[in-house]
Length: 316
Image (cartoon, rainbow, N blue to C red; front, top):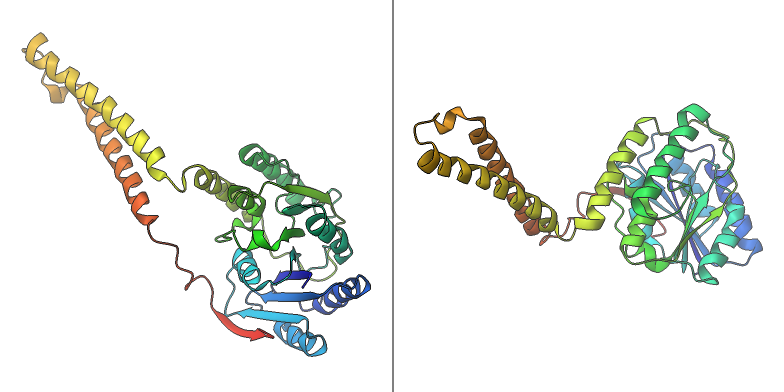
């Protein structure tokens, strides 16, 4: 199979038939062997019924329905797990991503040797205040933190070598940072391609301003995991040992001063240095234990059982 198209969706019943027909037309005109995997992330409209009808018309249509809304990252994880194509394309279901980009994206992965190509919606039709400006700030921070020079980390239209999607772990809300996750797994041939952005034709966006706050928090998380995720003791153990040593030096100074230099002076407990040394040693011990516990937790893999519950499947 040449291409797997993974499409996470939530309440997009109006756009699904048009999106399917558009993708199928592109695939057939380029003679691609393909599959379209719709991941219904707990839709409350008739999205699943439409996916069932499309699968009856086209055997290449597959579907997974979540029991409730689990989020885009979980939907992508489910789609990546099922994808069989040599090249995996992800796109949103709202018709803002153009399927006409698929042949060029496929060529960049299959024939030009890239591991991942991220779309860049250079010209956007979103609200400047609510989306464009926060997005530019978000992407600037992501570039600085990750070292990847991409303009649009969160673009839904991306192309991957199959090996990439089978080796990255998309969880929480980490779908924004899939290029960073791929880089952390050793895939270095990551680039971007300017893609067409279309105004939303049906419905309204499912994301609010809180996604930018969550995005920055996730960025801090992935920065930490990329550097210390496999060795938490290197951070917490170092900081804990340093703080404990500083506190110990304070306590040693107070003891020597009280015993030998000024035995008739103030009580040790009446001196602020005593409390500084005590608190510093306690915090140092806690940080060291945090690193130790982190090392123990790494011995156990994250359980996949409670990530999401599938209530129905099509052609799978």
